[in-house]
Image 1 (tube, rainbow, N blue to C red):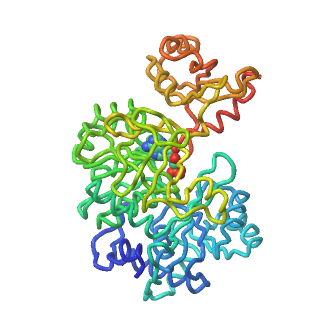
Image 2 (cartoon, protein in one colour):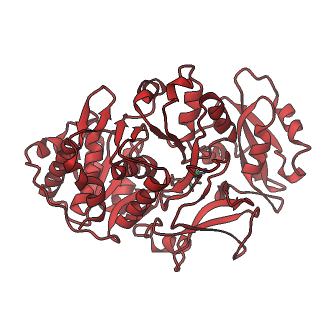
Image 3 (cartoon, rainbow, N blue to C red):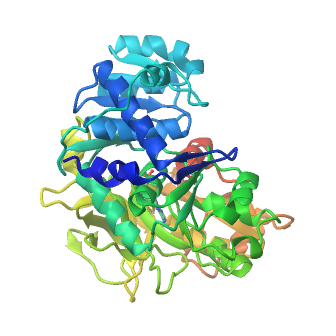
Length: 500
Ligand code: AMP
């Protein structure tokens, strides 16, 4: 038995129909993909990968890269995907921390990474953006006759490093049970079936694209349109063949910016899912107005997979992340006790989705994972009277000004309602009197003409004085990472001297 392999990959032996539809028009059947998985597993075993070994993978998104994930699962190894943007210096940290047996990289980076891999005694093989490379060559000499290694629910399947905006990133240890239980729940909750064609434009080095999208699609027996990344024109071209799209909020705003994205284009679609960063209520509403579809927003994180989701059938409420998933417990805590509706506190979750701890960081694990299984997410939020969960922001983004707590989201929501303002990011900056002062970074709607002073004046009556931004700037865009998250740490760094 191999919990994940048996559920996600083994059933492909019965599928002679297309599993992956590719950007250029080709496709790969389930059987062809499984053969690739098996050959990679044999090739990886031949270079010494044993059960429990980590395989670090920093490669372009290709069917071959997804097949390496399957191979790692089948081998009982631990899949360790790395963001393709990481520099060799950053990779050095991951190799030192995770001590993988092997690393895969693109041939164009092999020279830069070779000394890093050598320093940690890690073998380096290549897997390129066109699927070629030394691993593929080795795999092509294998016959595909591979029997997966036994793995139980508590065995590790993957380590995903957190994005680490403060301090070093931590390797979240995810078990077969974590990944399988979450995929099973989501297939059911979001009504995925073998008739579904998921438009997959997310990266596969992150939980959203790798687990939410790929695992859900594989488990449901459906198909994926497997694109190398998000490019609005390409997505629009493929939407007519899709039934579902999973994306980060920027996918939806970019689609809305494109006149080719029309109601007719998506009239046949079954589901749009958003997550990884907050979807503005305004985006939700504009999307509904343009397409007639209500985006289903859900909330999760690297350490926990998915925690909550808006309902498939009930009301999908803009600006909320819905209800805890079946089997997942969620509580809001303040001052050591659980609080009731409408009170903001720290969100904690418990369930089969919650990771096993941080790789080789027992103290960090103990700080965030309670002995009775509750994980302290670091997200502040509340439940409303109807039970919908609202995320207010990361606890580390909380602004404490003159001893008062200011939840950035509360101020951002008010700023965003000012006519002319598209969106905003509120941060705390060092201030000689207040400790921290509330500072707003504002993005205007295209063509809007409004000054910083006018925006600040417009919120004056709506926010207590200590919550009002003491200063603000207008930018063309908010800095975002590949998952669409606003990089508040960059903003804090840029403007740190503002009040000094
Ligand atoms: P990551 O581990 O990179 O997936 O980041 C997880 C974090 O993203 C969570 O702890 C939240 O702060 C944020 N996040 C994910 N989904 C949502 C959402 N739907 N709304 C607001 N924040 C979200």
